[in-house]
Figure 1 (cartoon, rainbow, N blue to C red):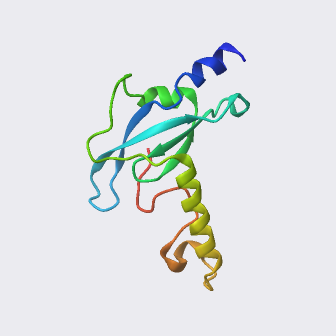
Figure 2: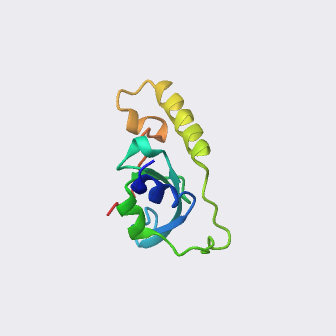
Length: 124
């Protein structure tokens, strides 16, 4: 394993926080997440970041470092970040719902979307 891979692996499980526009209030909101090292074969996009609302992104080490919280940071009380397996299961369920719809436009059918993006969230 190269030094860059080992350095990235050390960030596995660390917390990140990031501002996005809340889709309900239209105001900036801090979303908390956890990064999961996917393996050295995914260089440079080493990480899956999963946020407290279930949204997720693939991120590079540089992007993770931009939003990384200090070691020892704990999630604010009442927040839970789902594990990647739970997010994958939810995506499978959404895809199944979409496939059962008769509407041609999947994103508008049944009120679901198979995209990893949260409807209404502004990414930046």
